[in-house]
Length: 331
Length: 300
Image (cartoon, rainbow over all chains, first blue to last red; front, side):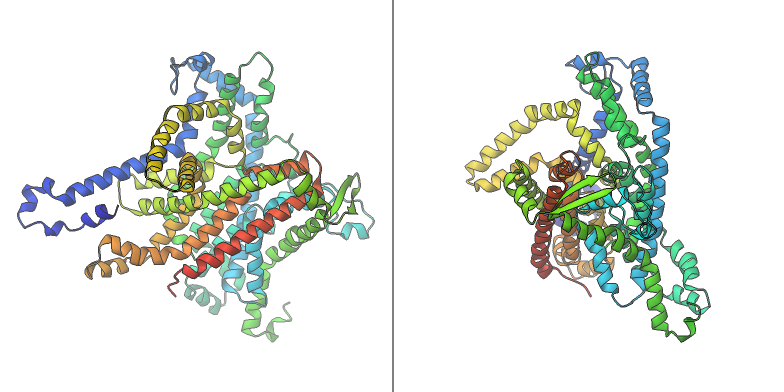
């Protein structure tokens, strides 16, 4: 890499006039080409490794059962049989109760991510712009919530929501604790208070972003008599669009994929995509289906699980990647 | 509060707003973090019994910790294995993600597409998918075939060359394991790449122009400008990777701990295991922080 980079600069060391006729003979030209070639190989290779699991899923979802036993078939089935492809997808679609579980998963992920977005934006702004007694300490606690593995508080949280007594208040009135498990309330409560999955990271991102925004506009608005809340909503929030997008994308994706918290708060029998996916193959047990066919079903299911995320990502990626540089994730 | 307003100074008012804005976190922290944290410490010292109306605790002292360390059949083994695996992954992830970020920061055709793909593991390698892929026969079969045909053969040849060069055996072992874990390393790198890339783009280009005019080569300006300015991000990324890989849902120790609680029903032991695990994470973080922060350069 050393020689390649350093040699690619001095085009002007070639004598004048020679450049036009013998461009292909300069070492600078060739090292440039070599470096582009190496870079292309590297980028394509890494991209292939990343996409490899996706390619496996796609390729096995279009296979008929007979292709799986055919040793000459690796990626593309011998004959593209629309009927068997459709059958794979229809089986999965019906078995996962796709429409219902998709709707439930979207609702849950949307609910959770919008709540987390709202609370983390609010909190992040509070940490970025205001000094108050203990603010430094409190921000240290944000970092602490990031560092502590969620497994540590999983059992107490579970019990708190199983026997939810409004933090002791219900007990004063002689009320029995209620069971919040199996409802969306645990998600709502933790997300609205910035305690959901990796919310410390979101608070951190929002804080860094707000810190990087110029103070002038905000101060002007305050001087002109806009209240603090109004300044936040009309001046700061529109300016924070890139960071909001990143936080929303992360939070949506992580909630969509999450099985740890979701299986703790919801019963495993809930009609949500990850649970349906987990159970997908259990009804294909027994002897009438081969392991290979079950694998086809499972891969098709995983593909159908990921596709909505790919859509969200594909839709947001332009803004997402452009905004990386402006988010100031880097403090 | 309205009646208070006139009496407060500007600083006082702003402090009040700060408290208002961060109030959700304060509430959440007390109710859903600090409370459960204290409870979990109490649980780790007790035997937990769930009844229809609540739960009972019997004080046990350090019995749960003793059980996890001495009696439990696989905790110690999985604990050491996981820790060692994570520690070997960290340098690989750091180096790879820095390298990839420099690559993605250059101008070339299809850069946008490359970035889109490089960040994709954020989506593709999450809990449930990783878990199912590990069970899946086609994934295993393809991985197995690839191992048999190519990887093992090449790595054998390479290992022989390295052995003939009299390289230290530990080094060879490290390289071979790292090579076999390339897909994991790449997948773990998505967010570190993002952080490095954001850092690379925040370096003012005037610095490079000045260096070029002064006659510095690209190689020199890389080590004299890019590297020092990016160095704080090594720390950020290191902390991120340690935390992320220690708490990742696919991590076998995390799965083991979850199973201890939900399948085996030994809540107290499971919580005790997590406390020891947290202790290990905290220890690594302190060491890394102490070691790296001395070598980090801050512009301001």
